[in-house]
Structures are given as C-alpha cells and as structure tokens.
Image 1 (cartoon, rainbow, N blue to C red):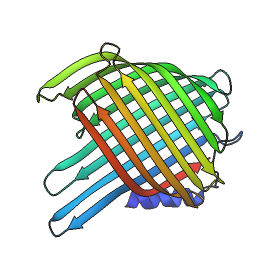
Image 2 (tube, rainbow, N blue to C red):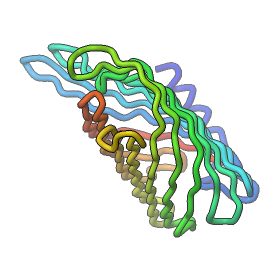
Image 3 (cartoon, rainbow, N blue to C red):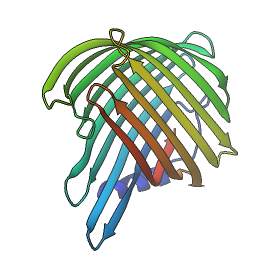
Image 4 (cartoon, helix red, strand yellow):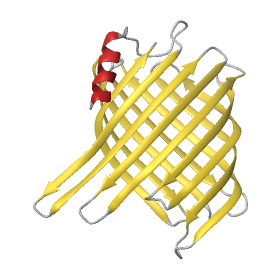
Length: 241
C-alpha cells in the first residue's frame, strides 16, 4: 500500500505527456488489476500486477517488463506466475526494424518450473501513427525449459521455436484505447509442440496519468497440456517523460 501511494505521488508531481515525441523518450507504466469473489462458501481472488519501462529514440527502442499473477480459492492455489522480459528494436526505416528478445518465465498454473527464451527477428509496421498501429513480426527463439508434463514427471529440454506475432492498437482522442496482440511459437522439430498467447486490453483515461483498464488474456502450452484464461479489471498508471 505504501508503494502504491508512492507511485501515485510520483506520477502526480510529473508533467503530463501521453506518448513518445522528439523530446519525450521514456515511458513508465504500473498496473494493478484483478478480481475478488466472496460468498458464504468461501472466496477466490486473482491479482495481475505489472511494471513496464521503455526508452525510444529515432533508431532504437528498448523495453523492460515484469509481470506477476497470483490467484487462490478456498481449496488451493490457482496462480503464482512470474514473467520478466527485455526486448529491443533497431529501426532501419520508419516501419521496418530488427528485434531481439530475452525472457524468463515461471508459472504454477502452466506447470512451468523455469523457462528461458532468447531470440532475434524482423518486424514491419503496416500502420504507425498516433491513433492506429498494426505490426507483424517473425523470428526464431532458443528456449530452455523445465516443465511438468502430463504424466507428472519433470522434463528438461532445449529447442528452437519459430515466433510469429501480430499487434494492433487503436486510440480515440487520447481517451479511449484498445490494444491486442497474439503470438504463435511452434517448435521447428514438432509443430504440435507450441506456445499460443493472445491478449486484449481496453482502457479509458480518467485523468492525465490514470487509466481504467479491463483485459482478457489466453495462454496455452501444449507441452504441459495446460491453458489459462484471465479476465481482469483495475487501474493503470502511465507516465511519459
């Protein structure tokens, strides 16, 4: 709670900007969303927290993000999932760029004990304006993992995956924004071994740096035969500086 009040105070004291520009190169976003259900028979809750930081210059962009999903019900733990990602883009033209990615994941809900990914690829922006963006990217990822497979044994592996991703954003007058992304990452050795991820976020700017947000996220890991569907709502604090 003290940390939340500190963030609110920090965001409130900063000048208000809503996007990158020639003089604005940094972005900080903190989100806290979730849901809670309590009845006479028990309670269940889910919290989805994330911190994102970005730097963008004319030819280079860097992003760092950390996310933690924790959920429980009366009977057992449902989620204790952590993801940390670093990525960068090197722009060759205003729309075409190379990308690099490093990511770490541990997920109770998806039976992932540890997973490390690193890769490179290319991407292209079909639309890249303040109000609408459509992007497609393609590349290859090296992956090392420790996962619990359906027969309840631990599997240790290293593979190379193809990574195909599609991103979309649409904004109306700097108030309403809808964004969506999805990726499909099959193994080059076996296309039945794949990761599938999709998310949709709708946000409404309430006041300068405060956004009301609602989102849906889907994840599937065929190697562990597990999948997640998360529906959350809450607030997002966002500052460009």
